[in-house]
Image 1 (cartoon, rainbow, N blue to C red):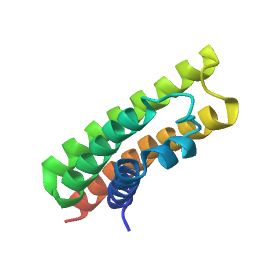
Image 2 (spheres, rainbow, N blue to C red):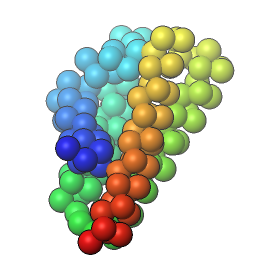
Image 3 (tube, rainbow, N blue to C red):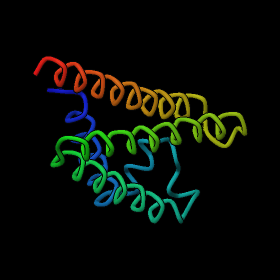
Length: 125
């Protein structure tokens, strides 16, 4: 499976989980839903974004897919930067924050790998 398809499917899965079970998803991210009553709302917002971005990227082709992959990389890069900010402010625990930053960073690298693979395939055609 190419990296962009993998990221797209992953976005859809985590997005649906966030929409259907926001408290559980928040806990997976190291956020206490009990301590943050608004966490379910914000988690669902995240879920809608992830589901939509994953779905449109999954079904797109050509330059549209490339552009949506770049958008996803920008979103994931922002997520990683936000995680670093929250870690530095001590609002996120070390394990949860490091995990979130790592996942977002991995998604950026996977998007880049997918784009590089797409360029190689286009040159070979």
